[in-house]
Length: 265
Ligand SMILES: Nc1ncnc2c1ncn2[C@@H]1O[C@H](COP(=O)(O)OP(=O)(O)OP(=O)(O)O)[C@@H](O)[C@H]1O
Ligand SMILES: Cc1ncc(CO)c(N)n1
Image 1 (cartoon, protein in one colour):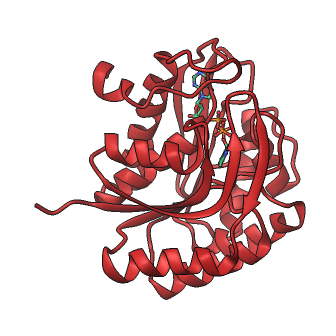
Image 2 (cartoon, helix red, strand yellow):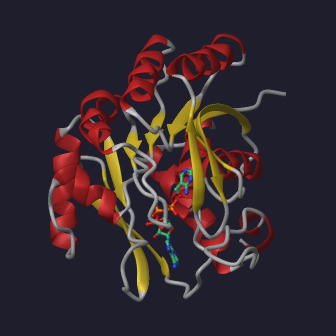
Image 3 (cartoon, rainbow, N blue to C red):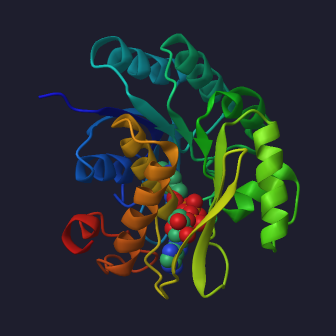
């Protein structure tokens, strides 16, 4: 039996709703073999982050080498990267191991407000990783930081998508989670046409790790050889079901439901 293989390069969330844990659960649900390279360990739950412990860049390099030289990687994603030194190592290893299907979720700040990427690493993201990516999936605040634009209208978001492509990425999904609009509308652009992905907006506080889960689902589908647009459509359906059927865990922003896509779609 051949199985598609996906690698997540991200931070560990002890609470299990975001980061490496969300990614591996998503890979599993989408029938892809999941592997991980951990960049940082966070002590985290639904209420917030109480500790961040960054790994030495060497540890990140060895993890990527270990899986790429033996098991093989059909697609990879990055999540929390923590600092410039780790970012440099990831860029080097992605090139060395010729990982061509790469999803970048430019994680900067947790929903609880804690910084997951040092501010001086934001420019490095543009310089080092964005040019290697198949697709980048910023939420609205992240897209504003990367482009320096204010993004309240769809026209502004289209202009921002063009600017992100000018930075060397093949395609972009600007996620619409962070608005009060009635629908959660994400904007896709691959340099040819703009497309939107819409779903009802659910009024729930259980949205911890939505971005991680969404980008992991894209990665899983790319690992199977799906086209980028098909991968993004499946990821939108996956995250929509995961938010629609909350698990109601924890006292704060609880995790999404990774079983829901299989159970209810
Ligand atoms: N309340 C909601 N109802 C429906 N869809 C939502 C809701 N919130 C987010 N989404 C969708 O979830 C996906 C992730 O978007 P979001 O903007 O929340 O990511 P994020 O901020 O990076 O998440 P996180 O930082 O918690 O991992 C997008 O497809 C978005 O449209
Ligand atoms: C480890 C980790 N990665 C990403 C996010 C963003 O949701 C988070 N809260 N924690």
